[in-house]
Amino acid sequence: MRALLLFALSLTAWLGCGNAADCDRGCRNYYQLHYWEEANAEIAKAPEAEREALRKQKLVDLEERTNAGIQLCIKQCTTAASKDEIKCMIAARTAPEAKKCIK
Image (tube, rainbow, N blue to C red):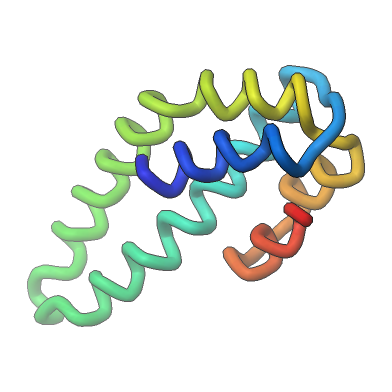
């Protein structure tokens, strides 16, 4: 949640205008990439017998966190994001790639 909130707040300072559908896709992708980067590191550290249960819990947690902050991100994106930055966020496949989308 914290990462999504920081991202959403940061958009205002960095970006120019986008549409809600693209912003939704970009925000979700950006947040999921960052979330799974941290979650996968945590899962890898867990005992092997506990990893599947932890991954399932992380999936539930991801959905809850995304739903809690997605509207703020979309609002910030639609008022401040450039089309190129939104396209970049949608196309990103890793957290570092997503971070590079925001100048």
